[in-house]
Each structure stands twice: as structure tokens, then as C-alpha cells.
Length: 387
Image (cartoon, rainbow, N blue to C red; front, side, top):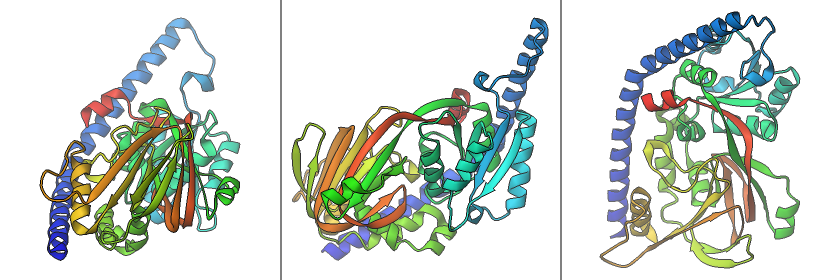
């Protein structure tokens, strides 16, 4: 019976995912050029009006760094995420020069340094805006340097999940459009999450903290990421995670203890514990409706299930949080917390992930949120309304 339900669940999810992806691709291609042209027109009108005002006022001084203008744009580029880096550089440079008239500098990541050193160098070189061009991993490392500074950060998404970009309406699969959105957008002070992990509470407290902007956690979600074939991700994108997740459906729940800032403790049987700074997933699914990037809180989801039937109940609750099983046994649990920090302990080591990057196994997680410390450039209200 479990096998039949498993096959039915997998078939339903795959068909739904493929349908959504095809629809999204068609809509993006139809709207991409219209958004870019509208943004260019808006930017040109804005700069023309600003120039006219300056002439009327007799102003001749160059703009200051505090008036929103940009003098140097740095692009931290993960070359493995773009097929033609020279074409990418040319298009980005043209967009910046035409809209902002600013200098552009590129800093390519390497295997040994996937983003941290390049961002530090860009800041030292005087960049007003640092664009993270790559997947969620590149975005995470750029943010780790810029969090707590006044330097603006933008995103040119080119990964599998692109979850941060999805949650703040940055154009996907459109590097020039993402650059235009950053140049014509507005600054938003957003939260970042920090995670420490270890094989004991003392080890977790002593560990170096790691940043996450989207979702961190351990258990089935990290297993899914580990099982996903990198080549399949390149071919079919985020749908590859569905196939990677099939192997996690039948795993066993473990004993989990959650401790909140008020010192209260809560025991669970769980397959996964997710810590969300934002809550929207690929395909438009909202896993964490209360995970807002600037509310100073993390939404925590502790989910457990038994077999394929239990997993189908969890999936149904994700699609409709108000839905509860009316017939048959309850084979799944999903508990949520909205908190400024959390400590999670398991009885058995679990794999850990941060924004889709796998980390070592651990039994203890300590997470906190740092409110409003990242100056993120997001599309303006007009851009968002056109999507």
C-alpha cells in the first residue's frame, strides 16, 4: 500500500512541477523584454528630470555617495553559472553605463575562494554596489561580508533554486533585467540568519557562525540536497530536487528537542527542522507564510512523517496550511515557531544545509537572526507590479 501511495505522490508532484515550470518559463519570456524596456524608460526619465533640476538650481557639485547615486558597481561573478562570461560582462557593463554612468569592475570566484575574498576586495576598492552573480551559495558568501555595512548588495541570479531572488521579485534567467532592476530599484534593510552547529552543545557554541538568507536546517531537506545529481540540476533546474527527495521520503523520524529564547523546551519526532528567513519555494509554493525578510524573526518548521502516506500529508499541508486529514490515521506532524533564536538538539547526527549548501552532520544547531543588517537593492514598486 505504501509503495502505491509513494508512486502516486511522486507522479502527482512531478506532473504538477513540470506544468508549473513550463508555464513560468513561457510567462517569463513574454514579460522579460517588456520589463527591461519599461525600467530603462523609467530610469532615463528619472535622470533627465534630475539633470533639469540641477541646472535650474545651478548645482555643479558631483553627487555624493549618500544621495543614492552609484559611482562604482562591483560584480562578484561565479563563472561556472554562466555559459558565456564575456557576453555577460559586456551586457552588464552596457546596462550600468547607460543607466547610471558608473564604473564597473568584475571579480571572479574560484574553487578556493567562492566569494568572500572577492567581496572584501570590492569593498576595499570603493564599490557602492556589489552584485552577487551566481547561485544562492554565491549570494550567501557575498552577504556574509556586506552584512552590517553600508555597502549595497544586489543579486543576478543564475543558480538552481535562486530562492532569495524569488522572494524579493528579482528577475530570474535574465541577467540584464536583474542588473536593471538593481539600478532602478530601492534599498531595503533585510534580516540575515546565523547558524552554529556541532556534535555537542559546547561545540556548537564555540563554532564559527555561518550566514543564511533563505532557509537553513537539518534532516530530510539536507539529505535531499545531498542526493540530488549536479548534472541533473544543470539540465532541468530545481525539479532535480524532487528526484533527489524521493530517497528521503521513507526515512525515520528522530527525537528532536527545540529550545526557545524563553528557555521553554519542546519535544518532537521529526524528519526535518527548517529555519526560514524567507518562505517562498520554487513553483510558487509558500512553505513558511510568516517568514518575512525584514520582520526580525525566523519561522521554524519541525516536520515528521511515517512512510509515503505521511509524506503526502505533509505535502498537502505545505500546499494548504489549513488542511488537516479528515479520513484515516494522522501520519504526519508539522509544528511552527516564530522566534528571534532557537536551539535544536537531536539524538542522532543529521546532515545540515544552509541555503542549499551542504554542511557536516551535527546533533546541535543554534540559530539567531540579525535584523535589518543587510542593505539589499530590490526592484521598485513599479517593477514588482509589472510581474
